[in-house]
Every structure is written in C-alpha cells, then in structure tokens.
Image (cartoon, rainbow, N blue to C red; front, side, top):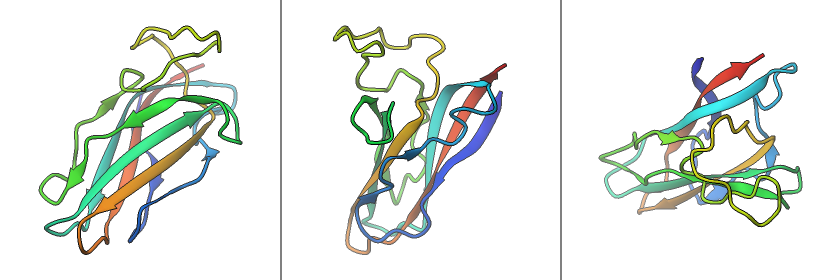
Length: 142
C-alpha cells in the first residue's frame, strides 16, 4: 500500500483553470496494476474569503473523448483547506466501464487507475492566490 503519493501540485494559482488531459502518473507502473483507494486534496496560502473547488475528470484516452467519470472534492475554504478524503471509486459520478450504456454499481472492487485525467480548479473570493496538492493512496497489484 502506498500512502500520500503526490498526483498533482498546483504551485501558486490566481485564476480558474485546469491541467488539460494528461497522462496519469502511476497508471502503468512497469506492468503492475495500480488500484486507487482514495484521493485527498490539501490547500494552502488561502485568505479570508477565498474558495477552491477541485475536480478530477478521468479518461481512457489522451484526447479526453471517453470519460470514465469525475471525482469531486468538498470545497476548500480559508477555514478548511483540508477537505475529507474521497474514496475510490465511490465518488466517481459515472460508470460505463464496458461502454454498453449500463452503469456498474458504485464501489465496484478493484477498479484500476485510468490512464488519463484532467484536474480543474475553480477559484472564488477577492484575492485568488492559493495553491493545492492532490494526493493519492493506492495498492500495487503485481
């Protein structure tokens, strides 16, 4: 089990934006299967009226055409820059792993990490200068 692996570090951000569709680190580690357990986002450098809404959209392709679903974190605020951990895959909003139109049940066991993702942050407040890190906790199946 690997805890607190950094999936993304924003650096200082001053406007709403996203990473674009990028390769997911750890998604194919030398033939091993990576099974996420949970994701955690931690903010920093927020001032009194700032907010940050972070989502991760998951994709099976580099073009972002085939969505796997979206992980949505609880909004970060100046008083709470450490929202609850989001379980995998229970908080992903859509399931159609075999593209049949039928949705698989939530919390299906052993769903591997999708190969592509896009992290979006939506800032609110007056100053809009903050940063955040997305951590992943996962198992490695050899």
